[in-house]
Length: 68
Length: 191
Image (tube, rainbow over all chains, first blue to last red; front, side, top):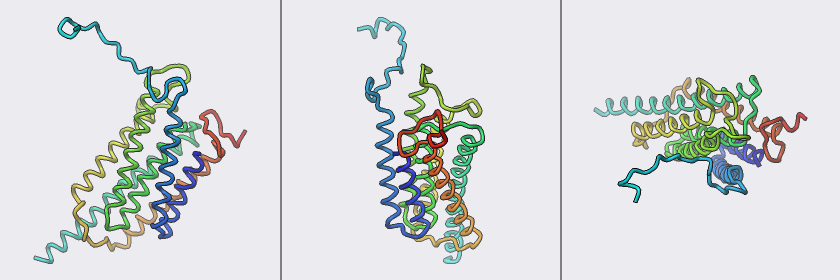
């Protein structure tokens, strides 16, 4: 997948360099779509999903006005 | 009066080109540094690091397009990829910010700051740079292109260099990941 992302990016650069902007930009956006897919796949955990439960805030006991 | 206006327009156009070239040069330096760290110091990039590099290359694409175009579409592309860079680097920072088995910052720190955090700074600097450019030169739709031969050759040389390091990165990704999932432990094709 990563190879496909970089391959489409390189094709977009080469097309742009050769003056074929009409094809270069769609190629770039294909690589962008692949990148977003891979990013979501990389950060997804079968256990946590997209959540980040290791980020915990240790709150001090609430004082009376906020304790409800 | 029209002569003064013409001089002002030409100066603004030249400054606009210089601004874009400076941003492109800064990104080329960042990408080159990442490659030096990879090949010189043996720091194999993680998948999210490679996606951050990809986002920086996307920004370069937008800047190169903007250098040769009168419309602002190149700046739009750079903005999209700057936001992508910010999202990926922020997520990776949040992933590694609490050290636990199997999750710590990849690579060594530079000036005490790890690479994903540097990526956040780079993304914010890019967003700020693009916003400043739009503020200063965004209304120059009818501005003539800079005709300086030296400037054109410098911009073209910079663009070719970026394409060159993109092709090196492509080959590096093939060697590291093959066509499968990437790992930070080894170059797949060398084992």
